Amino acid sequence: MSLKDKACIVGIGETPNTRGPGRPVIDMVVDASLNAIADSGVKRSAIDGLIFSSSRYIFQESVAVHLGLKDLRYTSIIEIGGAAPVSTLQSAAMAVATGQANYVLIPFGCNGYSEARTSVRARPESQFYADNQMSQAVKNYLAPNGAFVPVQYYSWIANRHRLLYGTTQEEIAQIPLNSRANAQGNPRAYMRDRPLTMEAYLASPMISEPHRMFDCCLETDGAAALIVTTPERARDLKQRPVFVSGVAEGHPYPADDIMNRSDILDLGLTHIAHRAFEMAGATPADMDFAQIYDCFTYVALMQLEAAGFCKRGEARHFVMNGNIAIDGKLPVNTHGGLHSEGHVWGLNHIVEAVRQLRGTAHRQVKDCEIGAVTGWGDFGDGSIAILRR
Amino acid sequence: MSDTPKPLPRRDGLNGEFYEHCARGELRFQRCAGCQTWRHMPRYSCAECGSRDWTWEKSSGRGKLYSWTVSHRAFHPGFAGDVPYAVAIVELEEGPRIVSQIVDAKLDALRLDLPLEIVFEKVADDVTMPKFRIR
Ligand SMILES: [Zn+2]
Image 1: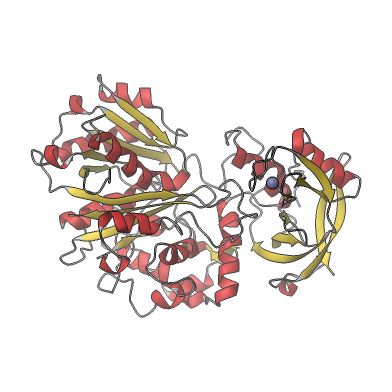
Image 2: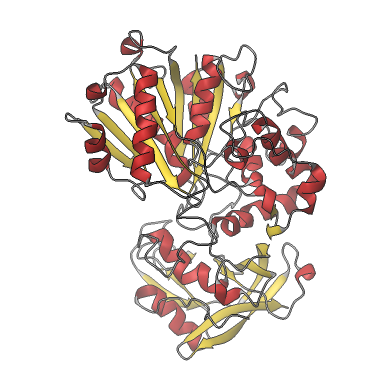
């Protein structure tokens, strides 16, 4: 059975994007969840499904008891890092379409600045990383050679891509400059009131080539949440529903090892984006906007190709001439993204897509009806959802 | 310069066997007994044919530069004295790719497909790391 239009997002909630002192994650998650529940008009006690992106920061039983969810019928945890939030929409759609749950809450929060930022967090030899296969690669083959953090891992992919296709600094800069421009005037954006110029971008220190400081996402503290239910139930609720028309997740092979992929430029998204578009009965050209997971800006550039918005090697041209601006051919990261709004593992990308389709975004894309959201996590797992009003 | 040592790989299980070969001055990878595919990182079965049989076979140690990133932050105090430094992906003639470092080369000499060869560097009493130089 196709999941096309079997589920709708009917509630969104967030906390502010801040930088410390971090509140307990559970406290922020409860706030965001209560905001989403209130936004939807669903009775709190009716929430019977709970889907998490990662088990690293919060714990299902704890969220359930803080919210008084006394009759949970379905829970799951998606462990694919920043690709998880978009992927939760697939699980939520399956749960509500098959009646395993009626109202699913999808919360996420973390103290990405106060507790987990790259400069302070524990190193691979410590307990911070679960002892899974991916951390085996890090501990035994990457860290001893000086590779510790995602900006380095993703830069191996990005740098080969850049060298093969000749992408220039000015072309890469289109992604952060566009995100920062969209963050201006967005009261939720951490980088509101702080415009970025090409000169400042080019003067920013290199972190791990080809990624400069302004190519790296923000590290912020915050939480967000969604409520998902069926189209039938959505009719009785407060908001205009946003339909999950297409959704897919994909994994590069092997997912636990970047270096030995037959083609390192094949992303998790590369071979699965078409599934979501086909499910939705739409093409990339039909999208009124795209929220692209922008942990690092070159990674966002490569996802534009993997999602099918342009051919491999052509993103460098696609992003030029204002094409990705709010009034361009394909508005991208209309809220500022992880680069300039805040870092809630991309759950905020979905929240922004919902706002756009409700017509309540701060930088509103005129008359938008359908848009795409991507996720990216771990060593390049990918996910994509096609949302429509 | 930091006094914090660089992190070392664990030397147990299959990873330990990989590094034991390095300590003897040999770069060896698992090779599938079923379909002859070379593989890295060490695993218990073959991703191509599913066979659980393998032998450790000696690599020529010759390869080429597949990709790299030059890191300008240390990200670990053990590397504070090394910045900026390149972390490379080297593709060996036999097929496997390995994350390593290029020694005795200027960063601006790096380019795709640069021919490389193995050198071993003893980094602790019981740990030898495979590194590469331009050939
Ligand atoms: Zn085999």
